[in-house]
Length: 371
Ligand SMILES: NC(=O)c1ccc[n+]([C@@H]2O[C@H](COP(=O)([O-])OP(=O)(O)OC[C@H]3O[C@@H](n4cnc5c(N)ncnc54)[C@H](OP(=O)(O)O)[C@@H]3O)[C@@H](O)[C@H]2O)c1
Image 1 (tube, rainbow, N blue to C red):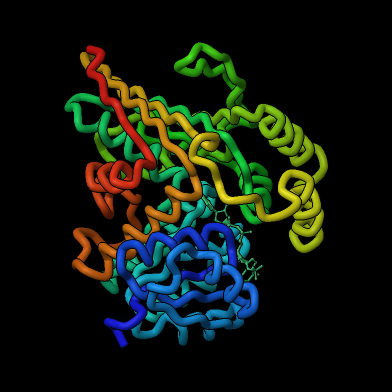
Image 2 (tube, rainbow, N blue to C red; image 1 turned 90 degrees about the vertical axis):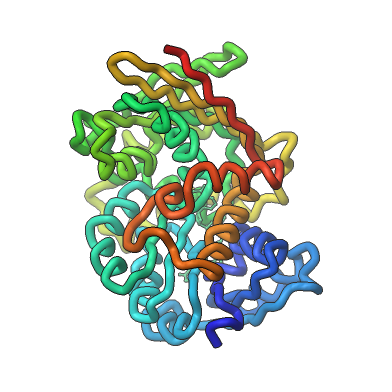
């Protein structure tokens, strides 16, 4: 059983799950396409280019720890794409732990990353398995850029920015709205410090345009680097080329402070999902790599050094599909270097991840020593 269908793609009916399957097929890894609705999974699988040469099975199941544990038993890795993770992630993590499989997800939710670090690191280390959130464009790729800066000895502070063209899927829009309502943190003098509220700044693009940016829920990078004794400070700000989206986020954060935070979750979630529908009414069409481009910049400084990495990438969802499949393929074929909670780069190495992105034409990077 272990050699057959070693990877479970959970959320296979979704936009991201489909791209994970597409890249697993490319990498020659057989998989189980799993989710709650067989008909939707069948439709999704049928849209995967080249699916006729893939080895896969479809499994529909209930979203319970028990059903998921049974599904994962005897497998090696689960690629979890069912978000928002703060709502749906806990059952999958518990099942991965019960079944002793590696866990990868696509979260961009900082509070979820913090929860995994605090509650699951030791447990997964105890069973020799990895738990890697944000194995995705946000914030795996920006971490790659930061790690290139950290290759320069003496760098202790990471000032990071990301600029993206957003075409959110249904769950992504829900996730964005969920994430911005949570308290978020950045790293200051080795401590994770809570943002007082919505922090904004102007961000200049390499072409000289000025965009309004915000902390966008905090990002995963301060969390990764809070565990690295070399790094004192780490902060990341995000701007969208589509500035309307950013304004909606700002309005929502303010509404949350004034009234939303008093509403019980069970009533709030349907309200927020209705709001998300105004951002993403339906599954968007396949990305265009000529349109959906992102720029991630990291400036790493120390007392006597300064280094900058500039990454251009295309297709945030494509890159997410590849990152998941690449990580899963490695975990099927090797014993991981680390166990427990790990960032994408801690688990798979920044140079290797970058090479994987480059091999598909998904991202290019320039690293400059400024001082
Ligand atoms: N960080 C990044 O760069 C990045 C990139 C891509 C995606 N993501 C995240 O990944 C998540 C999925 O995104 P997506 O683009 O795939 O969204 P999507 O197309 O809307 O798919 C959502 C998936 O979750 C499933 N699902 C929803 N509620 C469920 C429930 N209660 N029980 C079981 N399954 C449930 C859906 O199943 P049905 O089809 O049956 O509804 C579907 O398979 C989002 O949180 C998104 O933010 C992050």
